[in-house]
Image (cartoon, rainbow, N blue to C red; front, side, top):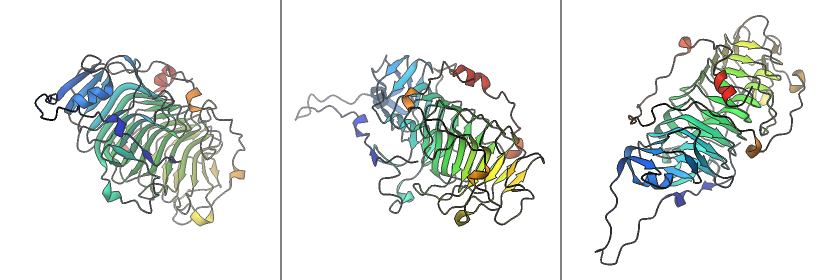
Length: 440
């Protein structure tokens, strides 16, 4: 599900210094960097403002439609809109990305990013200078993760990422980050994606994803990724935890997924999922030692939680406990093949759970789990997908209140809730935001 393009050529985002006279007598001194740069007051475009802002400074963007692709390459910079709904960065269906952050400590807040070919917001440590590299350039036979240290400290919040070609908000090769209080819709891969990190120390919280192929996706993001308190509903697939050889650090393992609403993921007004997925709450493919606890997983007509292998990587040691699983075609199912057989699944819940095969994961025994086939699940016909630019767009969404408050440096580590501290959510978790976005 990774892109086929080899590189995102972002060098054009960097402004060239003006050429001076040969003797240097008339050469202008470079402009002093500013702690606060306002658009359009101090600079006509966001790109120009980012060239003027100082380290740990802020670019504050006023209402308008900004037809540009911007690169945040100065450490500690905050890019913030004054009005989430009225500050719009558009790719016009022709540009690769809206906002790309490659500097430690970057923050993107309170704006809308739309109509890009690949990414609404991309935060990544995989770049050479200002040139961002994609995972598929040479395949990972030649990839050396040590050559690309992960980006440290980031935050994306109060962003509306809609109608972007593959991903709404994408964190790749990063650590110590927060993705919170965002909206993502109309993505042909996933609304929110976290990939390729060990010791991720990342929190995904309070987001709403709807009308995507997949609401939230994780590939090879492991050890300390917490997904809590999100509304992942009205997609084709609510969320996935996957191992993928197109990225480093196989297998995916060790996520906490707690207190989320993962419901009604059978949305026809969404792009087609690459593998034809439809009606699935949570898909685990080659994911290992993940904990799904006290989520509300309902109304997914194929299955609430689906276990499978990913190539030769089995799903093992996943714990599915104390969730409210109801109104799904099946509640938990294992359709893995012997070559990558699911093993060690632990299911804790009431006797009324619909498990396929029957008894799957009960008793939390070690060893290979019993498996079924897709023929044992409800037979659904996925509707044709909608082109990402044609997916219905959200209405006005909650904006930050004090947008002129100066940002403080992001923390070195993220405070993430422990599993025991997370309660099962109410059925109306973030429902007001879902309705405001136009999804009923």
